Image (cartoon, rainbow, N blue to C red):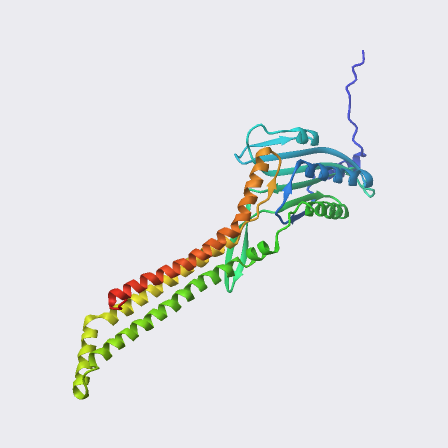
Length: 346
């Protein structure tokens, strides 16, 4: 009976054993890059990435795929880890969940021509639609912060710099093809959303102040007309006496004091309202362009809903701007009614 225990022979002489272990387990060099969104990823997209990388390595390197994993994260914070491409392509989530993140990982053993034994190389690609990063847009000297979806992230751990750079360029080009185009109007609105908010707030303030100025002029003209009415039938010293009596009564009644105080309060309220309006309009003008992982049927339904909402964002911005103008007109109506209370006739 053969009782010989099977053995595994390492492909290196004893004096190179340390270098062999370092090539497998040691800390490799790292390349990290990002590809800006928005993006749409399907199972076909992942399959294309897999075959692209496999074809490149099998044709130009002595490469062995040790492990491929795909981890899908859903909107209920659950996740599933799949250990082969076939498992990933055949997996169907039975629950009505939306896929929000996908993390792909390839582990290869590659024998480079200038190395005596294979070394481990790691490629990782992450698509995360739930995470957010901060972007900043300048409005004059003010920086406005917006939360945007994170881009696609690519990480390569390698032991050969040329190989790592080639794989980074190869995969980056493929990932760029997953990006979805953004219309010029939407890109302009997102880039200058702060200035759009400033324009909306300033427009509402100027229109309101102009109307307020016209009402104030009318108020002064009415008071002057009253003064002329009081003195139209008298002359000389009696005319002056009547004018003085009218001015004393006007000051004593506090009409101008109340008018000045009310105008100052209204101006402060309009200034605060315009600042708030500008901030709201700027936020509405900056619409986050979502990315989608279309790995479940519910994800596809959610994509259609969000795209319809994105198309309606222009109407919401228009109605908000018209509402701001209407609010300015309403505030002038309130001011006019208050002036009637102060003594301005119809």
